[in-house]
Image (cartoon, rainbow, N blue to C red; front, side):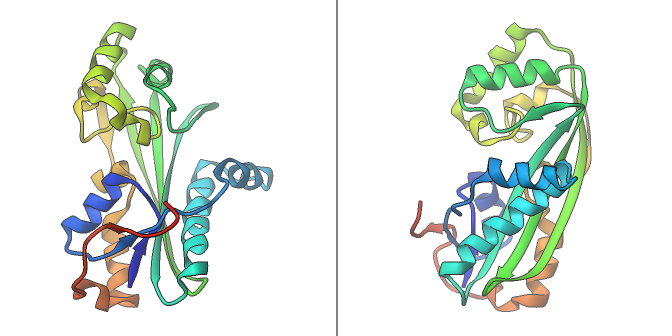
Length: 209
């Protein structure tokens, strides 16, 4: 059995698109506390992304020891700014205004765990830059996006209308969406090749939602 320790619609879509059959279970992890602990030991945004990915997979693996569990997370780095997922569209607008005209990086981590043992972990980064748009232009794009952006760090989706805000994008597309898909597929082929042939409902939700 394969479990995605996430409620992200984008990650679910990516896994389903390559023919993987899996269940979904949200991990119970205090993300801000783990982030603080990681930073206290000298870790930066990259280390936080990996730590959260592993922690989420480990948390779900505890109650599903026989399953292969995928954990993933993403952090955004822009100078000294601390940016997480926006809680409202107004919050998303403030984040985009802060990022406007500045280069930033997205760090995406992914981990594979079984029976509490990490089998694989990987980090990839991408460089992005928004054009220096006005507040009004940003709000117009967010009106098209709606609440979908509330699940994305930085308050934008490269796969949605907010793509028009960007000046440049350098990096793997899957990494930008929040899941380094190709390294994960390779890891699954090594550690859990059977998950590609299972007949089950793709992306079905299970407990602890």
